Structures are given as C-alpha cells and as structure tokens.
Length: 395
Image (cartoon, rainbow, N blue to C red; front, top):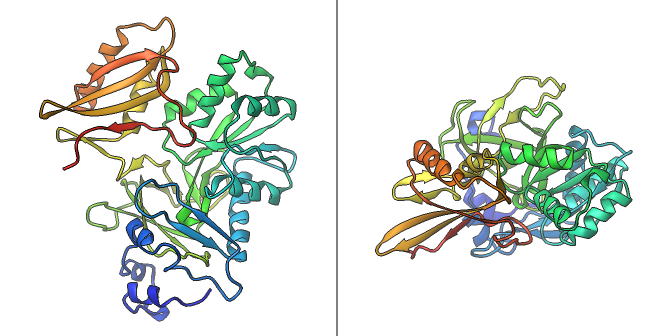
C-alpha cells in the first residue's frame, strides 16, 4: 500500500503512534459516502507499486459512483473472507453453488465465485436474470447452495408458480442472501417455499463487497471478521458511540484492504452489537444484529418517521398477501398522501385491508390508504426491489 497525501490531509496529520488504544481510534474523523463520491475516480486510492487488478463500482443512482480499486492482495483477501462466510453457512466442497448475483461492476457475483472456488465447490456462474433457466439448472445440476440478493428468491418462487415448475424437485439446502433489507417474516416465507435454510450476509462495494460478516448455523447474529474489519455502532445524529445492545449506525474501518482503505466509514446501516462472547458455534468474532434499515431510507410522512422494513414485517404477517409491496407518497392539494400498494393472492379476505390500516395506526400512528391488487401488478425490476415511490415535490 502506498501513502496518499489526500488521506494525511483528511486525517488531520494523525500518525500511527497516536493510536495506542481502541479509544484513540474514535478521535479520527468519519469518512462519508459523499467524500468517496467526491474522490471519483481514484483520489483516495492507495494501491501499491504493483498497481490495481480490478475495479468495482457502487450501485448508487445519485451523484458520482463510488469506485473501489482492488490490488492483487485485495482480490485474495476477498476470496478469504467469502470462503469463511460460506463455511459459516455450512457450505463444503461437496456442494454445488449457483451464483445468481450479477457479474460485472456489481461486487456480488465475483465475491461468491471466489469464495466457492476457495472451498473447491462446484460453481454454476449464471449471474442475474433468466429465472426459468436458473430453476432448470438448479434441478438438473443438483444445486444445493443459492447465493442471491434478498428478494430474488421471491422471483424464483413466482416464476415457478407461473410456469408450473415443481420446487420439490430442487435439492437446495442453503441460501445466502444480502444486499437488501429483508425481514424475519420474508425469511420464513423464503425458507418454507424453497425448503432451505437462509443466512444473512453483509458487505458493500466500499468494504470490498460481500464478506464483511455472516450468520452461522445458530442464526443468532452476524459474525464480523474482526481481523479484517473494525466495526463501531454510533448514534446517527451525534456520531457518539452507543452501548452494546443499543441500535445505531454501523461504522466500518477496513484493516487489510489496500486499494481503497476505509477509516471510520459511515455506512448508514442500522444495527446493534448482539454479543462479544463466544458463540455456541465456537466462533469468537463479535456479532451484530441483522441490518434493520438505513438512516437514508427512513420515510418521513407528516412528522412520522418509519422504515420500509417495519411495513414489510406487518404486511407479511397477514395470510393472503403476497411479498410485493410499495410505499407511495404523493402531494395532495397542498398536503401529502400515503398509499400502501400490496399484492394479494387469489381468494384473499378483503377485510385484511382494514386490519392493516388499523395496525399501522396503532404501531406507527399512520393512516394510509391501503390498495390491494392482483399478484404481478407491481413492476418487477432486475436488482434491488423498489419499495418507496416518493412523488412529492422537492423543497
């Protein structure tokens, strides 16, 4: 790793000898997404004399993208942490792993590929899309492990139903899902329909891709690989550290990445420290909770703050509702209107709309319009599901 004067400036001249205790780290300034965007393309990069071997890019849609250049060491580090993640989920060299995240500037596909390759497992590198082909290959090749963005299994289930594909012919046993917030209720539906056990994996382009941490077989928190990543949980407004168990914003520092090192990077993800004790699985890495939302995904409607995942949890508890929904915000004659659009299965009980409205009022003091529509009404997009449609004029 080479020195970069831009880092020296933004760290205020801090030197290695200034950091003798863990508390000293908290005196360093936070790194923000805006700073990484402003550094486009490589102003904060620190590649060594050997140069870069790869570049990946964030999937954000506003402003400059965030580029993460990888040295040869970074590519190897990524393979190592991904192999750990797969092992924690019970994957072995005897498994067949079908990779459904895309290969390209998005980090998902390559990360799973490298990890499975390290384990010696058979890889089916399909990438994104072609869902009916995905199902056929899973069946015909005896696929046992399914990595995916969290909502893609729902698309598999939908296409199987439309094409009368028998999901019972699959041999899936492990699902490794991430990249999106997904509730316990959504997890239960996926596990039941696909007859597998799902594991939540975290990571992002800025940290080098998926591999920052994963659940183990106990599914009692996400193990973070502390020899590669230092994590803090801070109060989002003040940036001060919160006690273990209290919810706050995840802050990540990369300890072994070369191309784009991160020092106290504010991820916007909300979580909490579950435990620092040895897990029943034997691992000693600290565990954080599954990500509960993002500070920048919070919806504000008439003074009420809420997160899409809170609505998802409530909706999926009702029989007869599908997994697709949208939160639509409109201007209404100088005021604002909130509509929850949710897909319903044939033969659903129409009174469910009134129950949902009552529960939303009790839980969040919201009184939205509830609009139930047939399955397939909400547009499916490749990649992350669109949960919030905000049509309100910008101030």
